[in-house]
Length: 347
Image 1 (cartoon, rainbow, N blue to C red):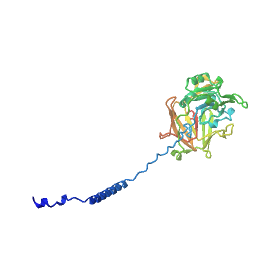
Image 2 (image 1 turned 90 degrees about the vertical axis):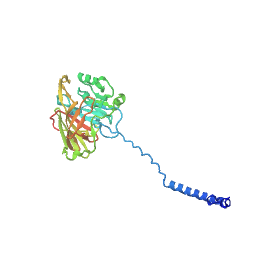
Image 3 (image 1 turned 135 degrees about the horizontal axis):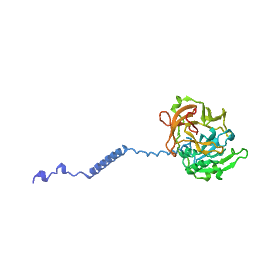
Image 4 (image 1 turned 60 degrees about the vertical axis):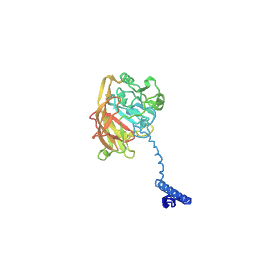
């Protein structure tokens, strides 16, 4: 046997002392631990982002453009618009006030209440065209003193909930300080509590506190138009930012002293025709104002005049109002007078 084989151990096969193996193992472990620490420090913890708070915004009343949107039913009331019926009661609380032609060239009002339910005076009789005008509001309440046979038949066939004094229905009483028929009062809070009916919905008004068209619009601090042969006027009050209803130059107030005023006056030109099959107690033919169709309008807001158009395709559809460029006509928030005038009336 060779000496190199039998007597000498090669370097590769020499046994490493136990103490040295322990030292090497500890060193390797320390290096591994440092490496792991370095990796974890390269990935810092990310703090969880809290969820954004949910902001609740009260819906806007579509009849005024003002928050909040009211609960309860919408109530439309037929009211007198002559000197004998003034001062009115509760009219300043209406959201929308329509002024329309009746017999003999006179005018009457159809006031729509949603934001408040006051007692109102003087309640008068319904007309055959009122259910057409109110059809866009849905199944709301219509309050009247009475009506002709044809007008009541049309009212009963409509989707409106009628409340008629001549039928002994809820909420009426007479004001002993006023002569009949100008003394009939309706308590709208009582009516609204007694009858379940539709609430507010869009009838076509687009609301905006600012309108770019105002800068170039023609100034209009007074409004004068004709409804039938009745002169209907308004004056702009910049301090109140309202158009105030006037008669013979005098500002109109309610019995409580409140001005009858709104931020907007809309003159809506409609076809108005006499109905020879329906007459008032004096034998005058009643007038039918058509509010389904299309035509022109003039909107007065912020002391300015903006022309436009209206269209309404069906009884239950809202009325679309557009400016000369075809964009929505913008109403100032706060409510509206709507004078339903014949084409050719001044505005």
